[in-house]
Length: 244
Image 1 (cartoon, one colour):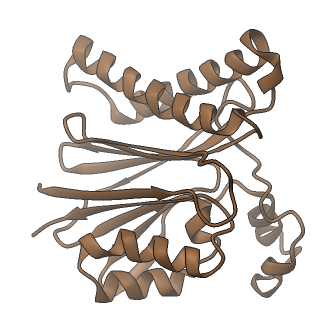
Image 2 (cartoon, rainbow, N blue to C red; image 1 turned 120 degrees about the horizontal axis):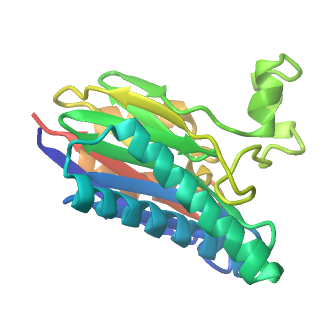
């Protein structure tokens, strides 16, 4: 299957540093978006450590085992090692970084099946014309409140703790990731992003862009629209396109 990939990150309009990170490794079939947290130094360090550790795990396992490996086992192990490394960095080696962590969405293409791992509130969407679905679940306080029926969709914008995430890579030493698998069909797209995009650009608008634009045009347009809407956070967007 031919897979084309576009990705871009932007500091946004109000932040002094970019704490997002991404990785595109076509040789491994590995793609990631991470959004770090932890204040000065911590956030960007956590996101970079996450993508670097996951890539190292995949590269090492491929070297040792070739492609005869369970993708779900490999993704789980990569998240485990990334969380261990970040936690130890901030709690053992450098306590001034204590509390840092990161969201992490991992897409892994293996034998024509796309496996997506997720921790945090960065997102992966599936676009199959003309429909868009969010295929990851936000690990956030606002999403938990929604599922319990304590708030409604209409009240999300007024929810005080809407940016609080309930699961991250590295805040605790061990983390459990969600894993979704999808046999991508020709013409389908997966869009991965940090909440600097999804928090400011509606799903309806993302769907419209996917319907109307060439896949190569979606990433820069999405970032432009997030900045026009205030650019409150760092913005990272990646599009994976299964070309016909």
